[in-house]
Each structure stands twice: as C-alpha cells, then as structure tokens.
View (spheres, rainbow, N blue to C red):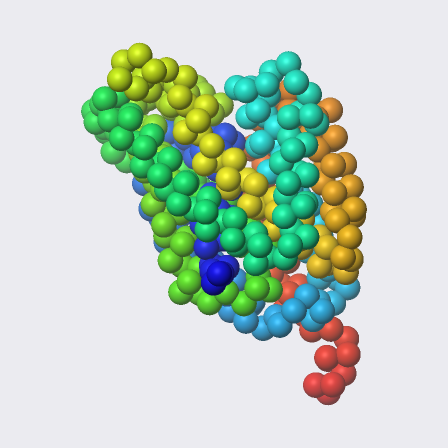
Length: 333
C-alpha cells in the first residue's frame, strides 16, 4: 500500500483548533474571525515554505546537535501538553464530567504510543482512512446546519480594528503551522504539504464561517462554539444528540498528532522502546488532570498565552535546526 506522508499535514494543521483554538480566534476577532483565517492562511503558506526549506537540509534526526535535540524535545512535550489540555477539557466538559481526565484520555495515549511503534508509515496508513471519514463528517455537519443559517449574522463586515484582525491572523498562522515542525525531518515536499494544508484550512474556514452564521454576536460566549452549534442539529426533526458522533473528526486530528509526537520522542531519545514516550506523555496527562482539565480559570489562562509561547518556540527551534553538528562544522573547516 503506497503511503502519502503529506496527508499528515491535514491532521497536524487542524489539531490545535478544537476548543481553545477557535475560541481564541473569536475572542480577538468576533464575527470577523473567518477573515483572519484568510489572511492567516496566506501567512501560513509562507511559514510552511520556510519549514520545508529547513527540512530539506535535514537528512535524519542523527544530524541534530545536542542543543537541537533538547529544544526539539521540549517543543514536542509542550505540544503534547496543549493537545492533552484540549482533549481532556473537551471530554470533561461534554462527555465524561464525572470521570477523571487521566482515565478518559488514557486510551488515546495507549493507542497513539502503540501506533508509533509501527513507524510513521503505519501512522500514515491510519491517516488515509481517517482523512476520508473526516471530510465526510465535515460535509455532513455543514449540510445538517443549513436550516440554522442566518446570513445576517455575519454583518457588518470589518467590524473590528485592523490591529485585532492582524493579531488574530498571526495566532491562526501559529496554530495551523506549529505542528508541522514535528515532521520537519520527513522530507515532505512543499507542494505536497501545501495541498493538504489548503484542504485543512478550507475545512476550518467552513467550520468558523458556519459557527458565525449560526451564532452571530454570541460566538464569544462559548468555550467550544463548534460543539455548541452542533447541538442545534436535529436530523429529520426527531433524531437528536448526533453531535457526539459528528464531532469525532476533532479526535482524529488530536490522535494523529499525538501519534507523531510519540514517535518523535523515540527518535530524539534514540530508543526503540515505547516505555519512554508513554511515561513522558502520561506524566503530562497527570499534570493536566490535576491542574487544568477541571479548572476553567487555568485552562482559559493557558489558551490565551500558548499561541505566543508556541511562536517563540517555533522561531528558536527553527534556528537551532540550522546549527550543524560539531563534527560537521569541523569537516567544513
């Protein structure tokens, strides 16, 4: 079966938007969030191009110097921290409010760690199946929401300050491109990454625009506006609560990203065992369970700052990837 590693870009670029990601866009741009997505996508294309250029200089993870390894590992762990916060708070808020997050999110970790033992090719095989399901779910929920559309809700256009729109665009760019650094050493051509990035951005644009058309000025009052909108769906006027099924696509994104992050921990630490990545991810989950998942104040505080922390880490990590190993420097001299 032929693998297409570029397909992973679709899931990576969507994985940080559930809950905090989309809520942050609405927080700064309100009803104009969909406009920020257009500008942010343009900026994101430039970021992906730069990441692809840096990745072309990296043959394998053996070319990393020690500083890069440490920073890369910290970057991966921080990304896992955010992913688990998104997952755990969502499960706690809407699915399993009486179940500790360490229990509800543990199956995702176990499956992700198991899947990474099969190499990135096996992750890609799973992604190919989930990609089709994800698109079907997005198409389905958009069609089912049509009866709730009120296009007057998007008016007036450009109701926020240009500075707020630009700020939101930067945040969107960071959230949609930060996970790409996890596959920087996979030598995925820019044009292949770009194809699935644009597909992913189109799906997010559709989701955000749909939320805006349905909720209007109320987009800022929900922690998970995308899920709140889905609750309005009633199929054939008698089948309700189907939001739990059609929201599954968001879990696909987080699962694929966790699988890749788990694999990269193994590569960075140069181990063939799944024990190390499992212990690291489980430790992060325990922290999330104890201090964030059921604490609204802490989760909102993190949602407000994590895009900027990611931006700083992206810049630092990208620069360190360009630093050659000591022996390579000596050889060049």
